[in-house]
Length: 152
Length: 255
Image (cartoon, rainbow over all chains, first blue to last red; front, side):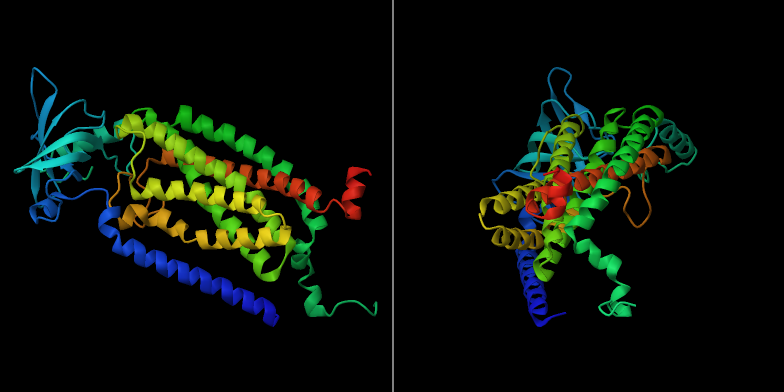
């Protein structure tokens, strides 16, 4: 390699490393803002913003969903398997909303209740055919404590 | 043996150094572009049949998940095209090889099209599945930045009058933008996002039914071959334009 090419290679590598380091540091310091949602544990620890709108994400606790028969009000609990937060929402839920499903809700804390303005379903990275899902359910039905350990 | 024949160690690399020759690259593109295009078309047919007809519906999303057979391969290719673009731009920048910049210029519109396709299909899928067309999470935002990087590369390259300066400036932009590629890929692991994590490229192995994985991979190869074929025709156009004063182009153009 001629000295001229070597110098150009060095300059390019220097620019790339410099910009990568700068971007890395920026992203690390912005970590809090890049995360889309807070977990129920973070809310319990008081890390979520007070009197401001933010997102909470977690799994809908099985058996916690109660709907009002006369309007669109719905109440459910969210968990990250450690802490729980109860959510109140009035509106149409996405198709994928169900117990055991991961969801992300946007709203504010009112006392100990999270009042949501928007509820989004989070899809996991598993794609299965319905008959396989049925087979797993049938297999799990035989075990006594299968409900809590459902990996999906 | 001729007196001016190159020494043995140099002759072994002649095949490699010929990639720097515009005429040689033109001939290669002319020969392989259409062949890759035909293979891409055939694989598209197979992939679409397997994906839209043969694959079973998803247990949660029903049939709407089938958009992944376009979304995932185009999203992968949007990253692949950017890496190809940045590497060829860097080669052009460091070794001052004309073909490097020519290939980078040819990659950009294709990569931008893949990115746009991934963003649009993703947002169409997001509405019924998540409940929203768009959310500013790390994955979606970094993919949008990728689209702007492609646009920026093309704009910068076309805005500067002097060809050499344009090539240098846009090559630096392409190489610096490379930092966005690992950010896009790992965004779903580093931060919590609405976008799900990787299904196929993960340590524990893919969490997708084999009957869905096969059409996904077929579509990936189809789009990859389409990229090669599109790249070949773009390279030909670029070379006919930039080398128009040379004798070999005059011969092809019949002038």
